[in-house]
Amino acid sequence: MGSFMDNPKYMFLETIEKHKEINAIWITHKKEDLIYLRRIGVKSYYWLSFKGIYHALTAKVFICDHHVGNVNQFLSGGAFFINLWHGASVKRVRWQAPDYVVKKYHLKDKREMRTSFRFKIRMWPILFRRPDLLLTPSTIQKKEFFAPMMDVSEENCIVGVYPRSKLLIEGKDSAISFIKKYEPSETLQFVESLGKYDKTYVYMPTWRNDRRDFIMQAGIDWQYLNDIMRESNSLFVVKLHPSTKINIDNLNCYSNLCIYPSVSDIYTVLPFIDCLITDYSSIYTDFLIMNKEIILYVFDYDEYVKTSYNLSEYDKYFIGKRAYNFDQLLQIMKSGEDCHVPKEQYEFLMNFFWDNNRYNIDIAEETKKRIGLC
Image (cartoon, rainbow, N blue to C red; front, side):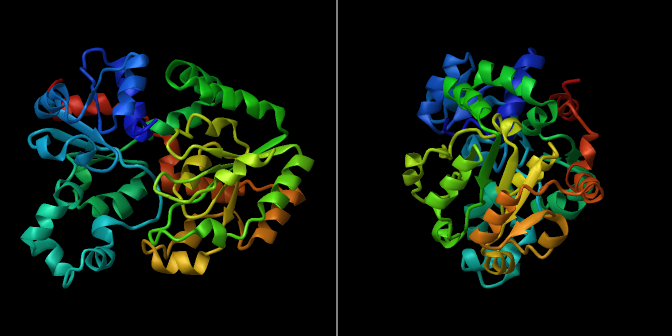
């Protein structure tokens, strides 16, 4: 599926359906996307093609989930830039993680982040091309994370439901309709195959900055895990982050384990999964929306929390059953204990991460107002 995913994908498809007055175009950096997008009737161009350059140059609005380089960083000047971002979490990045930036880019100190002309040129699309409109999932997240993270004013932030989260809120019927309309046939086949199992798990660990083989470090005995899954008529799906470059193809030889392609869209499948197993990933907060079971498999807790993204608030906001090694993980799965977040804590987390989904804002209409089209 390439780069056609996440919040921009879902907003793009919603815009096509609900806002016929908008000429929505998907600019892709991957040529394989063009074939798929045109097959489902979506207007799309390769970013370095004549039409791709023309539309990037003349577009009134750029919509991304990271930075303008997702479209064309060289031709974004003058366009209204909307950043939908890609996760509600407690990870502090960008302007909230100056020590990390200084170390990564070999700067002298934090002051050089603001004053170095060479650094500004290098990091312009990521740090210095600030969004004109930033989608934030909750009022608290806006104030505590998103506005300072992007170095933007709160007036340039709007609180609303993530476009990709709507399928999780609406449930299985909406997901099936979406899959039939927009997803490859393999996705529907996969979803239908889940019906033969009594319980389904998906393991979705976040990626590690140091690129270490954390899957081996996790100490999972795949054969034993498969035996447990087979005995309970369960399925264990592994979905790695697209940035994780670890070969786990050997899992395909097991009967009750499977690999979900790292570049495929998992959000259409999540409504059909019973239990999420993750660690420090923002997928935790997405899965919360459905109020399903969650297990936190944090085998490298001390190493990760103390060295990555200033995760000092992890314990407060990532609540749930925890396993610190493979034996503990198996025990939780075999015991049949309820792994839902307790009700009182669940309401606290939903308010912190999502404002309980109170603000289903139409981003397209809000954008039209801000650029003077209404």
